[in-house]
Image (cartoon, rainbow, N blue to C red; front, side, top):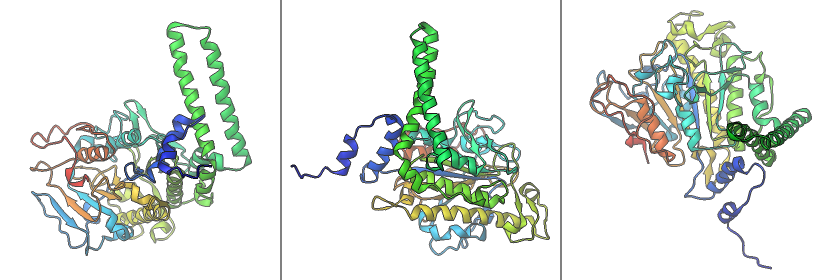
Length: 460
C-alpha cells in the first residue's frame, strides 16, 4: 500500500463533484482557500443603517474636523478614544478604519438614498444598475448569490426591495422576517417537516426539469430556445438543492437556535440581533459570501420605530423619522437619541464580529478574511446632503486592503484630491479581482476631480 499522503490542496483541486457541482464548487474553493495562502477566502457584509450617520457623532477623540481640509489626513487610531455612538466597536480598533470626506451627491434622495447608496446612481431610479453588494457577489460567488436581511418599520413585513440591485430593473430582496430568513437558508437543518418540505421541493424541481426535456423533443427553433432557459433555471435550482445536501452537517451545526427574538412580537433590536445571527451562520456554513444587513434603510422608508426600553428610556415608541426631524422624545434631545440608536446598532455589529473571531480559519479566524462596510443610506444626516458620506470599515479582507487602525479623511468636496464613494467601491472591486476603473455614475458637478480608479491608499 502506498502510504504517501495527498496534500489537502492537491485533494481539493482534484476532487470531482456530482449533482450540484456548479453551486458546490464555490464552497469547495473556500475550503481550498483556507489552506492555500495564494487563494484566500473572502466574504463581505454591508451594514446599512437608515437616518444618517452624523460625522461629528462618530469622530474619534483627539482628531479634529477642520472646516476646509485641503489635504489627505491619514492617522493611526492608537490612543484615540471612540465616540459614545460607536464605542462598542473600539475593541476592534486594530481591524478598523474611519473613512471621512468622500462624497456621493449623485445618489441624493429625500430621506434615504435607497439603492443609490450602494449603487452610486440617482436614488429616484430604483434598480437603475447593479449595486456594490451585487458586484462583489459576482466576484465572490456562493451557493446563494446574495442574502439581504433587514429590520423595517412594520415588524410583520416580509420582503422589501430597498438597497440592493442585481442589475438594471432587477432589485434584490431584503428579508425582514427573521423566521422566514432562517427557513430560507437553513431549512435543511430544520425539523422533520422542514426537511420533508426541502426534499419535496427537490423532487419537484427534478420532475419539472424532466418535463421540460420531454417538451423540448417536440419543438425546434425559437420555442426550443425559450425552453432552454427554463431548463437551465430548473437545473440550477436543483443543483443548489444538491449543494445544500452536501453541506447538511455543516449547516445544521451553524444554524442559529430559534428563540423569541426571531418572532414578530420581538422589539426592533431583538430582530436585528436575530438577523446578525443568521448572517454569521450563513457565512460559517458557507452558504454565501456577500450579505447586506439593513436597518430602516431605503428611499421609501424613513427608519424604524424603536421601543424606549431599547434605548435606556421608558417604554414607548421612539420613531427614527421624528428623531431625524430633531424632535425631543421622553425629554431626550434628538442628538442624544441618534447616539443611543447608533450605539445599539454597533452593539449588534460587535457581537457579529466576535462570532466570526471565534471561528478558526486557516492560521487565523473567519474575521481575518472578512470585510464589514458600515454606512447609512442617508449619508451624513436624516435628509442627506452627501457632501460627505462617512464609512466605517472593519476587517481587511484577508490582507487585500489596508484598513487596519486608520483614520482617513479626504479633502472636502470639490477640492484637489477629493474622492467619492464610487472610488471606494471601485477599491473593493479591485481587491477581489474586478479591475474596472469606475463604478456607478459620476458626479457631473465635480468637473476637476478625478472620479476614476480606486483609493490607492487602502489597497494592499
